[in-house]
Length: 355
Ligand code: SF4
Ligand code: SF4
Image 1 (tube, rainbow, N blue to C red):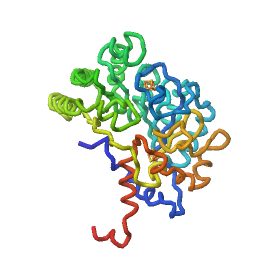
Image 2 (cartoon, rainbow, N blue to C red):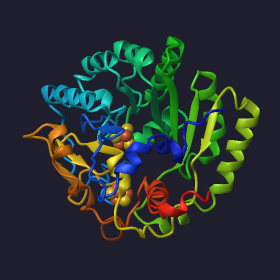
Image 3 (cartoon, rainbow, N blue to C red):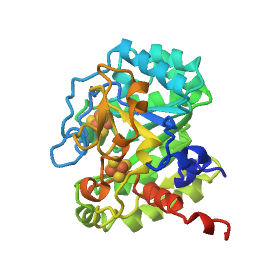
Image 4 (cartoon, rainbow, N blue to C red):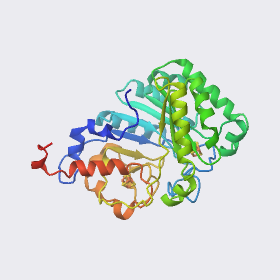
């Protein structure tokens, strides 16, 4: 079975990889861009890293920010011209609350840029759902509660929102388009005993893959591990049980419920991955990654007064300002990828042939 979640996708882009070090004079466009079109979201998940004070993400996020439509289309034109391969809409807020999204999707459908989105699924309906179904590559909906009451508790939404979400997902699956429908199942101590039932229900309504992840409850790896310590085995057992029961060919259940690094210290002093996947915030700043979005250290520059392509190509030095060993002692989604890249790029040339 081909894999969607793998560390090694980046090794398909060897020209890009070889251009990453500062010693290389070439600067190529990012392969993949994440755009946060809006910081607006009607949900209030208790663990939302952008909305609670005890988590690292987004310390400078303004929840009202949105990218003006005219600027958004300028960005899309730049991405297309630069040869960016893929675009993911993410939060900040929920991309489906961004009013120009439908016209953007129509524009993207006529370009060669693949697109995908993260969403809470509340607005996955009508023409937006149809456009995604026909032209999107994947869609991932975050879920935690297992029924109307628990879902309302997790997210500060009205009782009934869970039922509507299940209806939206089922209707999306029935559209039968090319877009892969996935769920990100966020697990904590409250819902851990319900994940088997939830996986079965999602399978029955046509969800194609489920990524099971631990709820991040703290900036400290040790605190996260202590909170989840009793859950690791339980989750693995449920994932194995459901994969066997439902059949690996009918649904992919990916267990990302692993221990956090005890320490978030970094042993390297440059971050190659930010040149492969970069982030554009709703505040019109470009950031190194999602972990440093809406922070000063993560800011590569502003595109308020200039085009994205101008900022990107204006200098290579900006990609070396962040010193992970100094500035990134927190959760980093790209840590394993950076470690692999630094080893790959640090290989002694004359010894490469002795494979
Ligand atoms: S749906 Fe996403 S952006 Fe909205 S509150 Fe929940 S985690 Fe935050
Ligand atoms: S090392 Fe990680 S946290 Fe730091 S800038 Fe790079 S991707 Fe972001």
